[in-house]
Length: 417
Image (cartoon, helix red, strand yellow):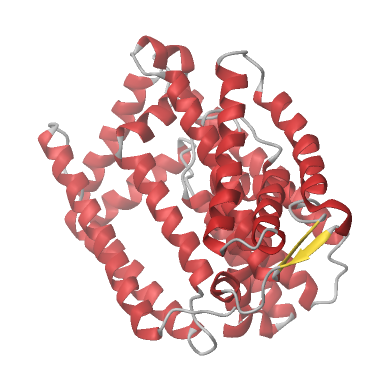
């Protein structure tokens, strides 16, 4: 947030909250409309897009919304979704990482070689793979903070260089199969949450949302601002709980929530809390909004860059390890192809701004669901996914960036920043 737009932003938010607090449900509607008119769209476009995509493919092929297909979508979305979560963080800083796919493949290769060729335990292999991601993030942070190398340049170099490291680590064989019966492979491919545990987690998630909303309302009162409208909080919590309970029931007609998908959701929840409720998260948004203003405010900007680049590469490595476990092998194609395109597109389509300072952890989850839904739907209706899917993905990405640009202009014209 820039210095020139901070006061109008606060004033606009106060107007919206007062409308909600004083006007009840009509006030809630007016406040929502004011935010939309001011360009504060949030996740609304991607959620509407997901509904439209689902309805279109359901009309063409009803099995698209079957329990079995939805479970498959979530399972295959998780690994790249985790990579996209790291992309969200660098985009919040107004930076980019083009090497996430190569880093994910390299980490998977390090893990596979450690386990298969050197006979180490899977835990050691996973630690080695994650460590390689951490090392890449530290290297990137050094290039950016100490040498001033733009993220586009060093990540483009990493895209090429770490793909070469992938080939080098795998050697002449070119591929390695992970051990059969490995608990890690079973975790990623075959294991699902028991139905009872899934329902308990859904209820806890709704209660957590209620608790954080009430805490936020109390903090606003302590700061002298208007409290959030309590009936509105309760209605949102009820709607969330009802939706998650129905979705859980529907998915457990087939296999239910996979541990792999649950891992992704937990990471999103943790990152969402870190971004919205911690000092570190506020610093990330501040640096992405205006780096110079953040420095003048006393924020350790270099530390923020180090933490974000390390987290991005670490999440890329974790996503690569889970993707390898999902197919039970690592090859020279691991992390290559359209992995970079899909992860970056998911973050942007999910609502994270390319201009920095705006977005959320949920962007990764919503964006990857959109892309995997498109891929699944096109496959079901018999469309060549290798060509049309890329065209459709590019069109959706362009639309998302266009919406972001228009929202940014609307915020600027309304004084919301």
